[in-house]
Amino acid sequence: MYQKGRAWIEIDREKLCRNITVLNNLLPQGCELMPAVKANAYGHGAVLIAGVLNEIGIKAFCVATIKEGIELRRGGIEGDILVLGYTCLKEVGELQKYDLIQTVVDEKYAENLNDYGEKIRVHIKIDTGMHRNGERCENREAIKKIFELKNLKIEGVYTHLCVADSSRREDVLYTRKQGQAFYDVVSWLERERNVLKKHLLSSYGLMNYPELSGDYARVGIALYGVFSRREDIVDYISLHPVLSIKARVAVVKDLLKGESAGYGLMYTAECNKKIAVLAIGYADGVPRALSCGKGRVLMHGYFAPIIGRICMDQMLVDVTEVPEIEEGDTAIVLGEVDGKEVSVYEWAEQTESITNEVLSRLGGRLERILV
Ligand SMILES: *Cc1c(COP(=O)(O)O)cnc(C)c1O
Image (tube, rainbow, N blue to C red):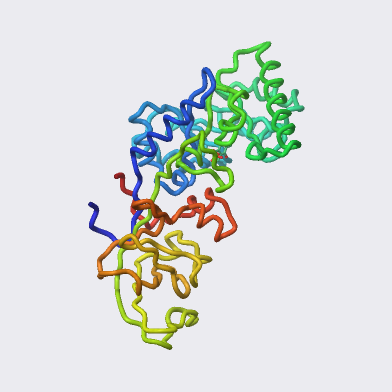
């Protein structure tokens, strides 16, 4: 057991590998996983996660920024690394130095990359209806011009689906239209040239539209064992949350009837209470919206409500009902033990968000360890 530190994240290697198996089984013929390890692998620790995935044979990753790509390389990660987002032109040399693949976000950007003057590996992003980055699928002249640029080593084309998580009829039709638009561009391109890699599925795309196929599935959230929302859970895709958060009990003290605690004195004891100070706060990613009884932690198998306002680095919990609590004990802030769980769905609902946001905001101050 890990016994140092004030608060930390545990990554369950076995569950991560089980999720990979589950997702591999969903893959259409000829498609492989390209895990999304952006935003520090959705808070899980990018080098840690990609390292495990490398060990079990995953050879392609995607990240949002060049900095995230460099971090992976410096951490010894092998294989293709695709930068999904914008890279400023000053940093193009680093793409080459660290052997990263850059996304071309439109024709103008392609020309600017080309002007760097040396070969750069790229995938071309096609906008099929999300209207975020990517050259519009109907601008075939522009797409053709990109393919004529001499310094771009074009290794793939891809698009992104924007309503693949929805089962509303109009969204299903929209997703099918996006798929059709993408493959129309691909087959038009392939009349004159060989397009190496084509991809369009992320987690919900893979789970809901595997028939849209492709060479890669860029899975993020599902890999970490969760859906974006609780209501999306389906029992035929058995995912296991990979991450838990633990924090140390720094102080245990009595709070007498009528006394208040924390910033704003938001909590008042209605009878004599025992409280514990946990060494974790909102700067570590515990949402402040869980303050004042909304959230709870697990201690010795009991739920202890969060009381008062969560501070930046610490928070208070009511441990009156928890037996034998001592300074130095460990609280499960997120995670499960013996069938009891504080789940990331709970946090997402309490903050009116999705699990993706809750996880990706977990702080850099928490150490990540593999268990
Ligand atoms: C973040 C991202 C993904 C991964 O999305 P999930 O829904 O977490 O699977 C895939 N593709 C692109 C372009 C992304 O930005």
